[in-house]
Image 1 (cartoon, rainbow over the protein chains, first blue to last red):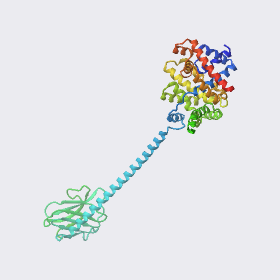
Image 2 (cartoon, each protein chain N blue to C red; image 1 turned 135 degrees about the horizontal axis):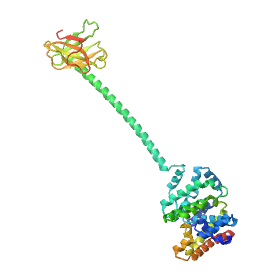
Image 3 (cartoon, rainbow over the protein chains, first blue to last red; image 1 turned 180 degrees about the vertical axis):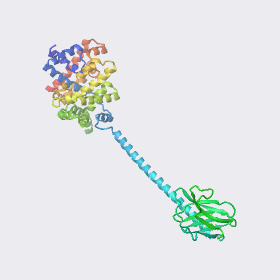
Length: 243
Length: 208
């Protein structure tokens, strides 16, 4: 076929729908660098593009644009940034709330501990004041004339028990405690409770009825922090009940 | 009365806008240069210019919104990956994009029908960037394109059918003859006469 005979076929050729025989004819002309056929093909390409574009127009979803541009790394879908921002804010908020909560818990625990200490101290002082103000309380001093004087007082009461107030009493040390003993006139010493020295002072109370007539002395030894059944060291304080 | 005139003007305005988009070439060289430089913003501009057109062509062929969106994305990525050999001074970008869009859709439909083989290679060959150089787009003015649209509407039912089958279903004469159960010669005559009508409409518009 000559160029003129092929002229009607270029639109279909450009669409790729020509049957093999006709397609081969055009291929052969184009392969010969036939200028007229090349011009016809260019016309057909433009014609087809316009014919395709005059159909009804539809709008794709907005997400298609985001998807396309995201696929070449230009922009991520809008929801991604919104989601990432929300997640980041939630994370920051969660960390901040966690820190605040932890700080509040620590402060609360410290306050509770301090309150317990103050309450315990107050109760002990109230008890000591009640002990001292009772008319049946009688004193028994100790430590007079000792070389490293550990002075203090022991107060005895037939119903309230024994109260020990010591001065110049150093801290017991790690794993150790002071233990008070009630020594009867007949029989072995009985443990009367553990206590620690607060700085250089020690205050200890043994509450409960006490047979003062049978009491020989009150003593203090340094013992393991868990206490002992019988004294294991030489007493550092001894107060005679009759003095 | 004034409002009525405005409403009557809307189709003309839309039509004008459409062909501004299709035929605009004056900023093609710059856009092609930016696409070649792998500027992602250039892709956004190209999609802005002809994304809707490409999608419309594809949707008309595949008739499925999800598939049409996938194929539109594939079309633009294909252009992005092949723009390196596109002539920035002599190439016509929009016709190229529309051809790739139409071919991707036809290829998809044919693969669904088990007709991939040689046709896919042929379509690939017919969307090479080199084929879109020196297109006579200046001859296709807005007025002539409008004439083409009205000429399309004036075709006989058979002529419109064969144009539809060739452009939107990718059928050859032989396939059309089988589908329409008509002699091959008859189908060829309908196609040839339809294209002649459309071409002559454009020619007359050019002379006028």
